[in-house]
Length: 319
Picture 1 (cartoon, one colour):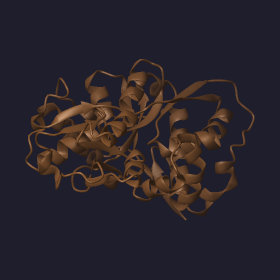
Picture 2 (cartoon, helix red, strand yellow):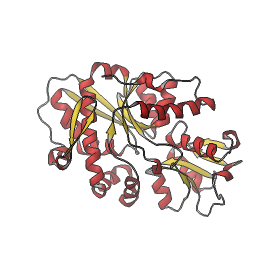
Picture 3 (cartoon, rainbow, N blue to C red):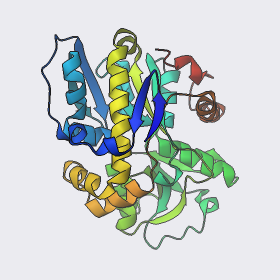
């Protein structure tokens, strides 16, 4: 058995992660109420979906005096808009949504980061599409969710292919509408993340490139600044629990897919593909991780996509 340090608490990882208590959802007596942790999640938030399905955060936090409430969002940017407007306290998104929210003055802090999963984001063309490479996107229309991880993939892929960002028509759509546009050939390509990426591939869409060599594609857990300052105990325990759950998921991909598939309307086989190419495990925010996030923020600033240059590390959680 090994020990991973996250924040201030030692977290045991190993055989104990499969203990029934982690996934049972059983609850102990609730302590005097200290507040409610309102969690925003999306279809890409596999671990939060599993946590909700198995009530593991309720099992951990209720005895400490915290209730848990859940709200689903179509992607990261609207989730962080809700956080900025005090509608949620905590959530997980890709790299760019946090940057856009921070640039807009959202009162958020970075709480934890995942390992990179560059294969879990990609640029697709329709079945039988005529694009040979990213270079062929010049003069074409690409569907993408603005401010999402896929938006940065598009920025980075075009840069590496020496295609000016302005040479491509961006059609800003959420995943469901973007997939319909791709299948109707109303756009030439679609930049998107898993599990939507895996679902479109299963339906015949062709991969132009994934994020390998183009972006880390980390997920970040962020929290509302006011909640983090007032309730560090809730966040430390939530992250500990999610880290344990991530380790369990990495060893039980089939079971994870079977539990989540009905909730998000994606076949288990598609989810298994998506889960097999993502990384598992949460980490505190290190200088190296912040440096990678800063490079993404600087790229968006140079393109005029955010209004001012930001220091991403200024939003570090120091609890």
